[in-house]
Image (cartoon, rainbow, N blue to C red; front, side, top):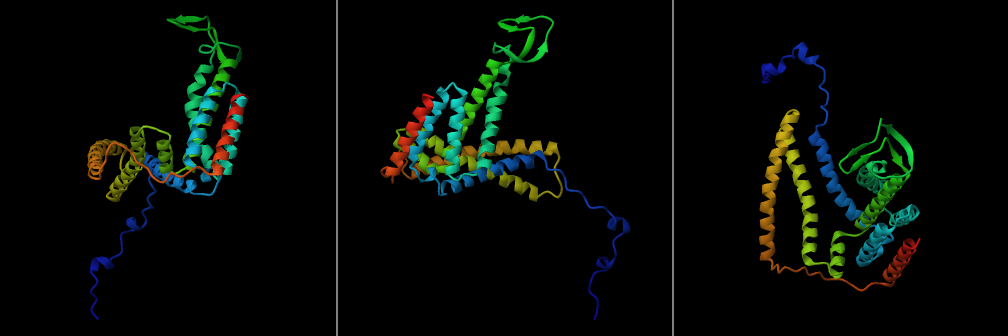
Length: 309
């Protein structure tokens, strides 16, 4: 039988090709790392829906009760000026999160990140005696003499004061508690139920529309960016340099801006075509159950205890 295989397929490759070492996987670029965070935004949205549908203490309460609880306790957190009271509120939030069957490591990982970045790091310079005067507990620098610059006075000895540490700890605990309360309600309540509760509590329709459209577009934006990056990678045989990545990002920013304007016009036309009349109408709000009333009373009573602690 005649051999019909081409001759070049029967030839052995040269020795230098056979002995070429395997190419190592290229290090992930800053675009890939950024896209991981974008994908995390999408995953967080799905996780929020999953945790809101689980069987837990807060999941079984009406959204109106939880919105009132959130507003009332954030007010208490802002008014308290004692560290032990803020710590007690944090323990109370921890117990609620555990009773709601939330993944505590993932929950507090995000909470402590925001608390450390927006609370501790931002307020840390205020602990110096050049900002907050008081008893120095940790000397840092000793100058030859004090200096005066405009309205600022720089003392001879610069250090961390006891009063400054108290202010840093207070601000950090307030931010941690406020973020914990917000995430606790978001993780245990579907977004549509939150909007419905805000509507019943007489929040203006314009604010509700802005919240709803912004919430929806965050996931649309994240998914669009991820799909564009995957489409780009599928057309590349090798890795892209940092300069090419920056040019691609600049081009995608312009493209997304234009697409956002077109999407906004299309959404508005679709809303007009479906009879939009500048008002939000929601249906299906039932009466509060005995459990909702009892839980609301318990939250108010607990908040008053924290307020006078």
